Amino acid sequence: MVVEEVRYDFADYPRYADDFVRDLVKLMIISKMNSTARNTSSKAYFQKLVSQMESCETDVVKYGQPLLYVKYRGVQFTDQKVASQFVRSKGHIVDLTMESVFGEFVKTFDSLASASESRVKWGAEKPDPMFALLDRFVEAVGRLTALDPGSPNTLAGRRFGIRNAGIARKSLHLEFLVDGRLHIIELNPGKRKEKAVELLFGASEAAKAIVALMKQ
Image (cartoon, rainbow, N blue to C red; front, side, top):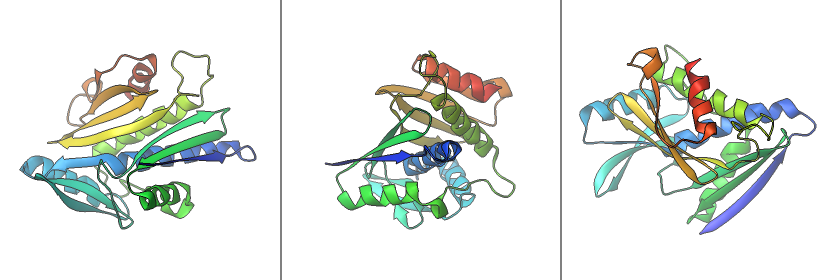
């Protein structure tokens, strides 16, 4: 297992830290997006979402059964390729930790995270409503990483990562970690506004705050 930690310090341009965190969370989501290829509805919706993400295409991987993942800028992601988490501290410092059995994949992920030209762009034209929910999630995480470290809702100083982003029919189950604790939220833009975002598992104050911000 190859483990690498990279520090990004935006002390000279603190506001850039906000942009970096948002782009990093987007990249983390894309790197973990998947769907079964055997369910027609899930497959079609996954392909629709991927088609609305710039520089992305659907990639088929066979793990006993065919699964769909995202190929981003030529990089073939699967849930086993790379694990990444970050900690934001002092408002302007972001420490990114990457783990992989493939050493070159750690370097590739770091390059994608740090290069401004590879910033994730999704839902550009007539976007699927799912992207509005994903944008709210990304914004909520960004805001909470910039909160005072003493707040019970804060993500500042806490290790955050995306473990899985699975498409099931027209919904997305987003699994994320806060200091190693698992949380799962369901995003379903087809439901009423108050039900479009639901916390299915995990009860930390930070997770509750993410959902509350997304429902505003």
